[in-house]
Image (cartoon, rainbow, N blue to C red):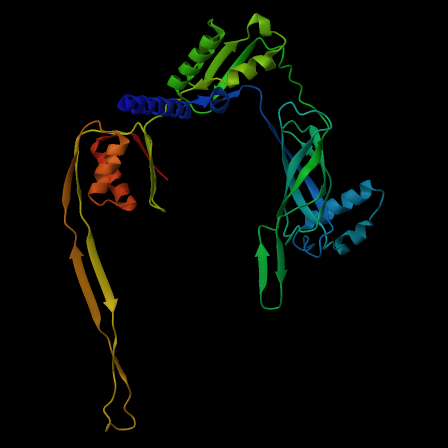
Length: 375
């Protein structure tokens, strides 16, 4: 009876492990796709940062900094004589480009983050304040206004002979620094069909997503358009509440299909292989040649009775050692899995850098059934 009890517990934990393992391999539709038309939009603007401690643009190298400052002063009611423009010097002002992402469904009054990057030869934006800057979209329409103190998350201090700098000083950020002024109208709730766009092109995964949605709705509402797109017709009961419909679909779990790929980084010796990598029968020989060259100069002292002009002599001496490792031939059988490949190659003492050369040779022979991507 005791043995049966232990066996039942083991089976229970095995089933539980398999359940969690299967869940770990699946992913939500939300993580595999995007919804066509629901995306952010990039904004850009040109502005001025003031309040710098002598680290702004130089008037001799950045002429448009003076032009921008004069234009701003004119809008504020301050007129600068034409003959005095070239005499102006603003060491505490820097010209910058301001960029931001306008999220989908952003409304008037919402605040978004902005990034400020120096355009001229400013040395630092530390302690500066961005003046009111319109942020425009590709259609030249102003969608947001940015303004506020800049945070660069670093500093720079220096003396006469040495200085210390932390982080990048000519790029800063303003959290919630832009106010949305114009909305991008999207009537999402009244949509009659939803288009899901795959983040990675794959026919198998797209078909699985379509089948999962149809199983959930117990009818054929989803269809695969191509390896990147899935069209889902909104059921009659969800007309006018498409947001709730999408909310139910995004949480569905799907097992994505993963293509066989091997990623190799020659600079660091890193090799990453997917679980679907397979090999045909191939023989691998691995051997190494070690050559060590060591300089051991020998100092020769003059004898005790040598003349005063005698000096210590340095005689060159070179030691060379050559050692060749034993060549080992390993036969890798057909169709083995990733774990078997790694175990087999480790058994002959293959290092990650050696594995890179071996994989390239196996790929050239046509025995590696996977995409070899060298970065």
